[in-house]
Structure formats: C-alpha cells, structure tokens
Length: 177
Image 1 (cartoon, helix red, strand yellow):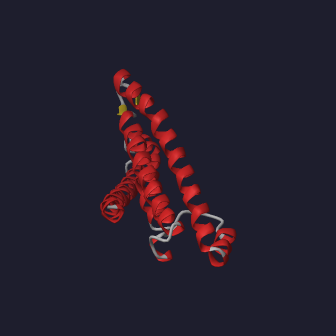
Image 2 (cartoon, rainbow, N blue to C red; image 1 turned 180 degrees about the vertical axis):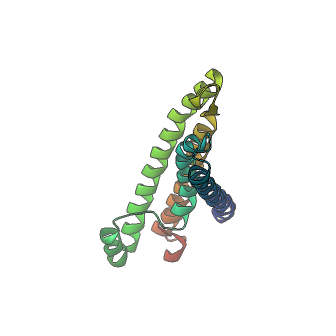
Image 3 (cartoon, rainbow, N blue to C red; image 1 turned 60 degrees about the vertical axis):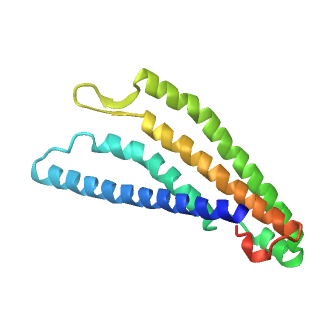
C-alpha cells in the first residue's frame, strides 16, 4: 500500500515540478519581452514586475515536493550518513523522525496559509495599481497551501519508508533522503 501511495505521489510531484519549470519559461519570456520593450519602445510591459513577484513563491512551492522526493533538498548530511553506515536502523529512525517533523512544519504552513488564502479571495486582495494592472493574490496562497500539503504527504511517506527499515520490513535503498 505504501509503495502504491509513493508511486502516485511521485507522479503528482513530478507534474507539479514540470508546471513550475513551465512557469519559469513563461517568466523568462516575459522578462525578455519586457526588456525588449524597454529598449525599443522606451516603456516596460505593464504587470511584468507584479507577475514575477507572485510567481517566485509559486515556483518554489511547485518544485519543492519533487526536490524532497528526489533527495535533492539542501542538507548537512555528513552526520546522518555516518550514522547510517555504522547503525543503519538507528539512522533510519532518526531520518523517520526528521521527516515527521518536516511534515509537521509543512502542515503548519498549510494550516496558517489557508485562512490567508480565504481572506485574500474573500476580500479581493491584489498586487498592482487599480486602473493600470492588478493581479489577485489568492492563487499564490492556494499554491502554497496545496503544495505544502503535498510536501507534508511526501515527508510522511518517506518517514514510513524509513520506519519500515527500522523494523526490518524493507531494504535500506527503499528509504531515500
């Protein structure tokens, strides 16, 4: 069952990552067109700065779950690597604990981001200037909340994979990160 959840979650994290990459390409195109407009027409394209500002958080949260799943998060792992080499089950227990704590932190982000998203949606919060260009902020909050939940789930799956190793139910390679 855990392997099925992990494989379905992998598809979701990869799709979110691809969406984040696509957004990066769109932003690059927007920036290039904006620079071209500044140099040829002497005026920037309205809304590019606002779009980029909101998109940074969106890109980060879209790509974080896959980064975690693939074991590419920045970590100081010298200590845990030694512990895994010398005492694999203890190392797996420590990593499972770290992953549970990571899930808790991401659930807190989702928990406190939800009311912010609802408020932004209900009150019509935006960035920009009325009459010139406005962009609603709630979609950014929605991505942060959703992707925090996905990343928390990824942390929990990884914690369970490590826990299986602690209790001898899986080989060491099944619990990455």
